Length: 245
Image (cartoon, rainbow, N blue to C red; front, side):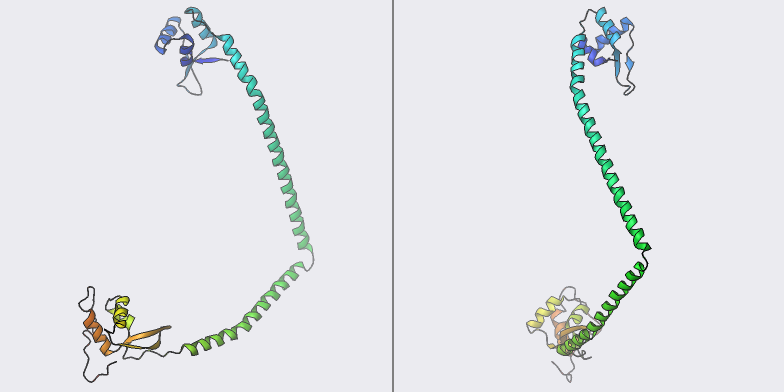
């Protein structure tokens, strides 16, 4: 059934919405509300024809029906084409599903046959055990070589423990909250008496340490620096009889 929204009726009759409502009130015609959208009110074809006859307005029924038929005829091939495409797609999906089911059935059959073969599981287990034993043997052969390398590297590296009379430069700088870069620059410039050597401390090699004289030089050089924090032994006086480096 053809319906005519009120806005379309205004266009057909060439009047505004206010005039259309007056016509409807005079003729006792009540617009109906759309179930899809209650905000839309419309008239039926009979109601539109009654208004057109009452107010002597032409109603282009023939052109409208021709337009509808043209639209229907043009939409039909497109609908048929889309329907064919969907059917082809469904056929392809069904073919893929059948192929997948066949593959799964074949895989399950192969798995069951392998399980039923006597000794198949034992052979797999023996193969894994053989591989593990060979790997363990290879690891065992490599272990002595690694130990030799460690011993050789330790001999080449050398290094002894740090004497109790010395403090590592980096440790001393950290205790007094002085950046290591600043302490290293002072060491290279000869402003601090640094004892150089090679000591193994906490699995790390150190090459610069401070004796009693170096600790006093460090204190005198950095005590005025911002952030300097004295320790319990500051100002690190040097006794006349102590050895200097």
